[in-house]
Length: 177
Image (cartoon, rainbow, N blue to C red):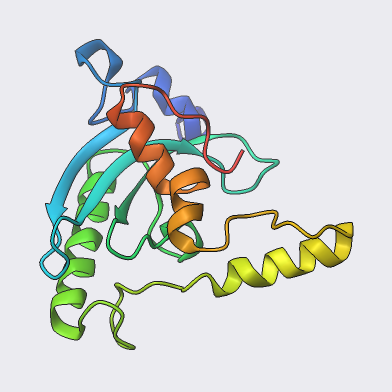
């Protein structure tokens, strides 16, 4: 009997995957959309947004339905902070992302925005400056390959750009494709 038991994606023939955002009920696409947003307690006007999106773990891999959160106070890219992006395999995945979003807000409340022990802090573009310097050396150029601040990078190539398109009702391209 175990030999005939479906494994991996074979389950989808029997039990379709469940998403919070379904195109048939007004979502941007199946598994693509905003789930919830929490007001940031320390930065007025900022919020921590839980959202579903399509993304790749590696550029050469297949796209997956993913879920994560994004803080508009610190613009942390959770894809590069291990453990904050999950494959969207059912209702527990968005719940886990929402829990991590609330923990992010609590950390900011306890340790302040930008504190050394706070999860809510800017990277100050340090890595972007290093990548730009290496790219200029490699390609012999003088202009930056990437924006030189985390806020600008997030707005053009990061989670802010994905969330902006979702809010506009447009299906964003696969993240990290």
